[in-house]
Image 1: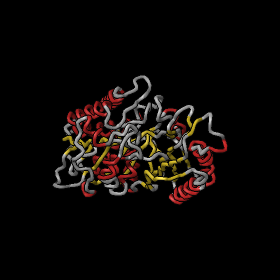
Image 2: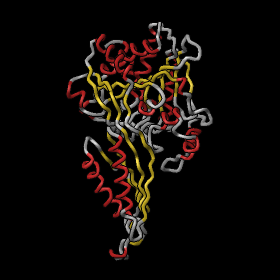
Image 3: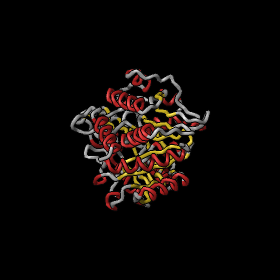
Length: 409
């Protein structure tokens, strides 16, 4: 095992300790105690590798290696460091660790870039605490407004601003970043699916990322006693919601071409065993490689939900997130493929079925992504695992590409 692979394993292992659910996977919610622990570790390593560290008004972390050109845009490399509840150690952190290791190699080989290199660790990609997802990158590119950011609350009613203050972060710092300061964004991520492992190929060259939208559906009825309210006199919000949810898979199946729809979160009010539910709130996650399919499915979901507006049931649909399908930058993809060839590392082209911060950055700068295999295709669970050798291979490729993009001497 070489030094690079050893450091990668040490970083992954260290970050995996910062979890609210030891022994039951990684639970690292944004602005939590575990976030603070991971944040301190990442910043410490950035400084160790000679990077100048700062945080923005969202809590995103940047470690900068200054370039020799004045006011030149940076080549960004990184990923996110939050997790889903009871998730794994690799989804997000593998990309942050890859960025740290590229910086370590720049330092070790005394490389002086013309354009700055910035390692970036992003918050709240998963949306596990504040909903919607991709919050760190959306704030950086300016599609999450200051007002919207301040109005976000978690399920306990804690605002983003309060939660940031709780771990000593300053939400008044600038959030949006001028696109002119970004030359490119590179991200390594685990595949989260079975394709690379089944093919026995260590690198997936991401050509495009699927589009996705997240809707929040609210269904309001009327509470009542479970024993004394006759069946024909009920306006049961949960029964209405369940009927809608049962029809959603057919919408995706009839759309075809790999379109998918998922209901992942359901809240029932007042949530008593002997009370007829007065309100339910549930999420609908819609994804497809073609924008027309996404728009069709949104329209069909809206029609379905509207059709239940009767007999005392009231419904509403709120769009929490909308991201169109995104193609990666062909020039950087060509460069990545060229470096794979030089390093004799096999690759194949792949599309991403999951959303990533890269899709947000693609609106304002040149973006490319690499995937590495996921054991058994598993992700978002404690069993999630990727080989450190595969991460090291990807780091080697990203290091060579980062040298070219920063025009390092």
